[in-house]
Length: 287
Image 1: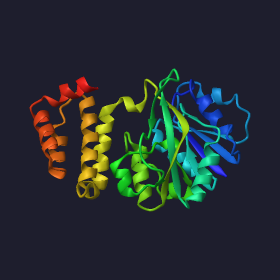
Image 2 (image 1 turned 60 degrees about the vertical axis):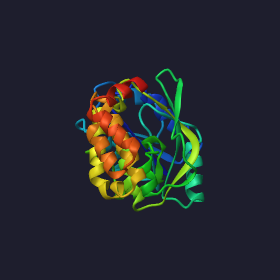
Image 3 (image 1 turned 30 degrees about the vertical axis):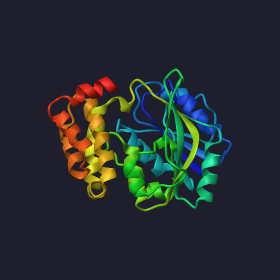
Image 4 (image 1 turned 135 degrees about the vertical axis):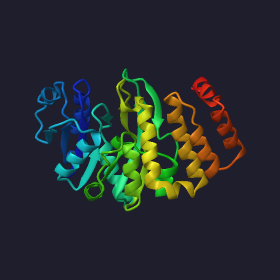
């Protein structure tokens, strides 16, 4: 059996399609836990419309964040495998069937796939991840490129019960989780689009300051591995610099680190542009 976990907070408007996309899977041996993070809307009443014995609802006593909600779902899960969806995203009908087959074929502990990212009207924006080969994902691979998102992940229950999500990560929780899992378990990427993800106007991804804090936390956890690989260091600090720019600041500290750990003429030039205040206007123009 697969235990599917959906954390939800004030998603009465989108929760029904997300839940139905799980319950209508071609692989039907599943239980679905919707963990309500103390919503103030009518999420519970919306879910009451569904009369499916595989659907379970649990409400947290106080608003505690998506990671705490996911961890409660992991605690409640009784399946041999665990998968995650978000309360505003929809799985393709054969997602579980294909992922389980791929997990067994590759002798993996955890697998991840691809998704189409759409706006609220359903218009396709891009595919994530947009590059990478099918096959194993190492710790170094994941440090170099954050190619996982929570609604794409399926794995053996023991993996998540041993290493639950970090509730203190304000963003990039999925990247943090997969980095930790990759140090203990075999992870593989299935290069197939099996999820449609919808960008909401109040999404956490709209808050770049949380991204900056999350990058600092990730650096503290993985500092040695990041600074010892120039390609990883360059990728990491460029990503953090992008978050900093989105907050309206010049990323001089980030490009100083980039110049230190991945020295090149281009990175030195970026540092000088940031330090003199010119990088941010260029970033804004380009984006």
